[in-house]
Length: 266
Image 1 (cartoon, rainbow, N blue to C red):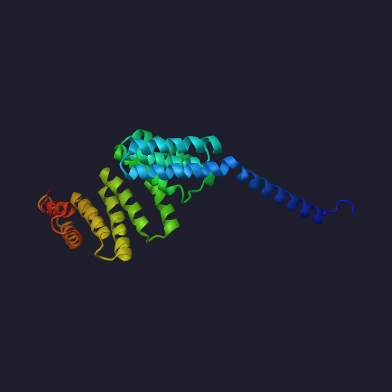
Image 2: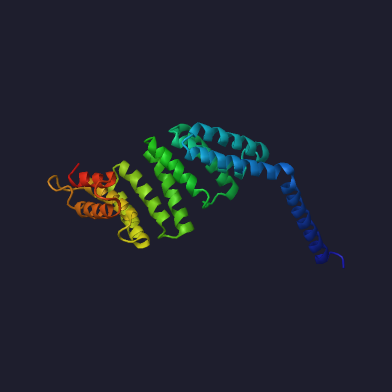
């Protein structure tokens, strides 16, 4: 009948197009260079990580740059494999204290992840955001680091759940950068939430609990409202952190000695 849609023909056309697309993808992945490229890049990354563990950062960087050159040539400058290798290289440069170069590579890797996954924040974007924020923090760029931590936190909450230890760690990082900007009142509730998460997930006597207790004690100490008793609110937290530290590390451990010095007002 004239003007009537031939649904059978349309369905056949759609199926043929899907089959053609599937075949094209198989042909792409079957290209010898693709799988070989991935295999070589993975091997170079593994070798680079081994060198890094040995403390040979120059050797690790050379291998990582070689892997980057291979994936850029095969997948283009915006390929997902490029982002992965960029993150590896940025980590190496960060650990080598080349913070400016590390920052540049982390930014590029984040841009690739954002472009690949779309405009909405994605779980693969969060680690890069946190690493970039840490690099900026080490350069003293606290105001620039803060929004990155704030953006990463809800991604972690969505990915892991609101009470996951990784969320506690993200909360501490955000609180730390606020503390460094003397925003103590804003940092305190973040540390308290992180402490509650660690106590719930790790138990009350875990070293991660002691770590957050120390952070919270420090920020309370800085908010001391009396010149004569600036440590009143912080002292019980220091003592609890000390007790946990001595239990796990012994009384002579540098971390324990640090807590003792803070109790003494040092």
